[in-house]
Length: 350
Image (cartoon, rainbow, N blue to C red; front, side, top):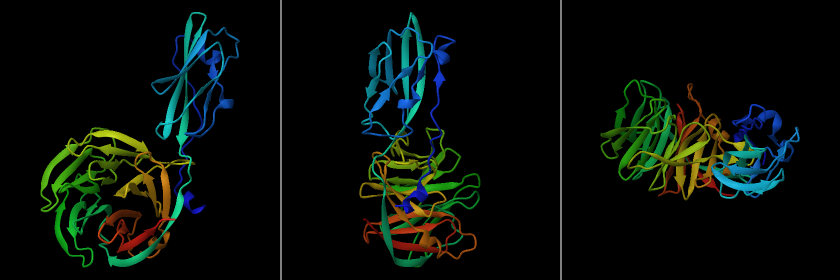
C-alpha cells in the first residue's frame, strides 16, 4: 500500500504543555505523564491519564476533562482511563484539575485521534477523452441535467459557465468581477453556489440562466476552496483538513469533519464531489483523489491519477483539480487547472 501514502501529510509535531492555574509553581509541580500518552490514538485505544508529581506534593483529588466533558475523577495521584469513542477525528484537549492542600492547579495536554482502517487503493479505467479549455483555471466541476458546469479562478479571469463537454460549446457564461478569485461550485435545487478564495463571499445563481440571485458572506473566517452537496446540505472545503457542512438556505456552517488517515491529517482538501454517500476530494498538488467518509472524515480509499497528468500537453498546465460525476453514465469526469483534456473515467472499487 505504498501508493496511497503520497497523500498522507502527517502534521503531528509533538505534545505541548500549557498551564493556566492559580499557582506560579504549577509547571514544576505537576505535568501529564508523557510516558503513558501516545502520539496518535484510534477510537478503540484506551486513553490512560496519569500525573507526575516531582515535588511529592500532597494531592487530594484530580478531575480529568476531555474537551468540555468530564471523563474521570480520582482520589490522590491515581491513574484513570477514558474512552475515545464517538469523538471527531483530529486534536482534542485533555485537562487535569488538581486539588492540592487548598490550591487548584490546571494543566492541559493535546492528543490526536486518527481512524483505525488504512485506505484501500482503487483503480480506474479511461472511457473517453475530450478537449478541455486550457485557459480555464478549473476550480469546480459538476453535472446538472447532463450539462457540465465549471467554475474557474484567477483574479480577472474567473468565470462560471455551462457547456457541452462533448463539443466544447458554451451555453452560458458569467464572469466574476476583477476582485474575486473564483473557487468551487455546486448545484442544488436549481441553484448554482460558487465560492471565492479569500474574499469571504459566495454567490448564488439560477442554474438555467446563470443570473445572479444573491451574494452571501461566510460566517467563518475561512478560505473558499471546494464544494459539493448530498441533495440536502452543502459541503465546503477551506484548504485545511476540514470539510464544513453548510445549510444552503442560510449559508451558515453547522458542522465539520477533519479528513484523516491512520498516519495523520490530510491538509489542502480541495475540489469535492459527493457520490453514493462518499466525498471524492482532490488534494491540492497531489495527482490523486481521496475517497472520504463524509460522516467521520476518514479516508477510505485513494485513486492515483498520475497517469492522466502525464497525458497533459498544455504549456500552462497546473495541478489536478475538478471532479464531476454523471449519474446517467455512472462515470467520473476529471481535469485540472489549465489542462487541455477532460477525462471520463470509471473508478473500480477494490
